[in-house]
Length: 239
Image 1 (cartoon, rainbow, N blue to C red):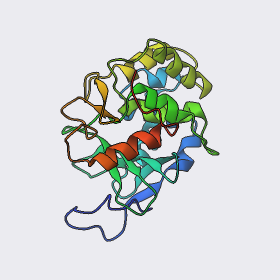
Image 2: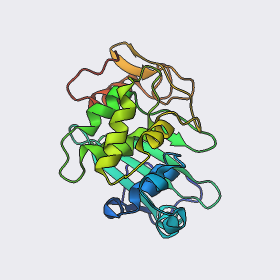
Image 3: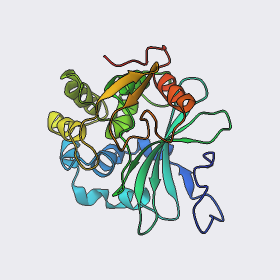
Image 4: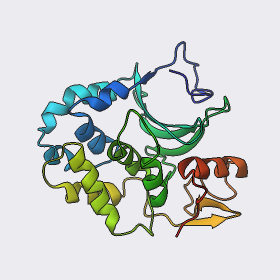
């Protein structure tokens, strides 16, 4: 699997791409408790899906395989694709959210979830809008839960907890869904709730660690592309 320029700059350079399509894993019965506990940081996720944490060991080994890095991808507006990458360096792992514009140009970093974190990637309205974009392979519930771990929004509505809980129920959770939803939305592993604002007609994060901040390393064109790819209606502003 190739994501334009994602692996560039690593030393020594890779002899082959370690990126592998993880889409088949998403239909596995243990995928969501594994994903929401590892990427989302929810300790209660296995219980919500009535799973013994010990039963997750095999799928977690696949999640964290240093030779093959699973990539979970969602189509977005136009030719864009959102990739969630399990970056499995043996001693320096993390999770990256990146946007492939689908134009042949370099992928755009949205969030890096590790010790030296960057993000968040999304405001809450973007998560909702992106979750409901057309997708033949993933339901809105699956899309929502894939995006939520990289969202932080200080102006998030109260109903967000109910929406995440409902998505988990749709995907097989049996109990404790509100607790898991609270853990996902209020996680402090990487960032505190971020304020978002429209500056120069594009939605940007106001946190100092955000890739998507005004005056940061992303160009105004990249910031605009991200916002409009996530909310293709053109209403990329915040409330």
